[in-house]
Image (tube, rainbow, N blue to C red):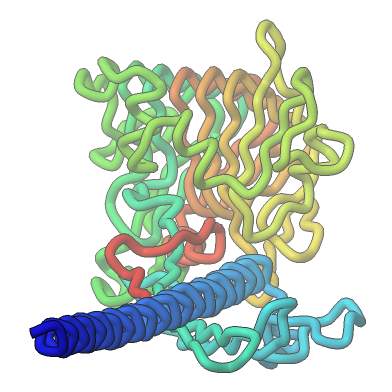
Length: 413
């Protein structure tokens, strides 16, 4: 009986040992599987983090390349002096762009630029492809950069004034492209000078009316003088008179003066203010405005003062004096906004558009080619005031623009 009990006890112990062994093996297998799963999860996480890092790296490279390319086009360093495309990156640090690709600290980028036209203004399609430092990730960004039209509602007559027009010297106003010369919200007094007259396209011209499509092609006929006010002159326009100078500005330029000043101008001249990013030279009219070509210039006239313009040429590559005219090849029309009162003396010549917020006085021999607009009164006290409408100069405004990314054109993938 004792032997039987001993055998039973030994068998029971062996069964318990087997059970412990099986459970241990199962637990070991489970632990191994869990360890393998965790190791795999960590590896996947590391790969995801690494891929995300490389993708961000490639995207940032593409973004940096795109910004550099847009800046190069905006500053016109994408071409050389002969308009040959040279690139957007200066890879040899010699001060001149030479490539469309470059190596960055954490990868590389390649840019392609395709010129297009949007609303008759120059525009470009930019495509930048960024590559990560190990070459495993690439990202592409595409965006359009288009010119902001600095004069969306161009005038169709030579002279527009919200206030009165008073001519005491001599004056001529020419429009070979239409039948309107002067538009005024106030009273127009063209004086008693025998030389004062307005001229429009002559219907008797053999090429009429198609000749009006080309500036200066039509012969002209006198319509108004010291004794006769023709239909080409519109005065006492109450709708125009009721506008404020700022509202009149917005009618031509499509936005408020404040917004335009910040977003459309190439040069801001503020003689009584601290230097700005758009300041030039000595911050004076002579250094910043005279000789300006293909620009949008904003001049802040200090409160209580009047800007004195004494000669000079604006909007032509060559200096123009006396009765001379800028050659068409030298035309570089400029938009000049004078925020305040101004007096024109000497013999200044302007090619493009001149907008005056305040009162304008002409006491010299002043010549405008393009159009002149006054938000106040315009008075000619002496000398000669000559205004020639020229749509070619107004249409060339596409060169006087700031550039921006077109809405809805940004794509990154």
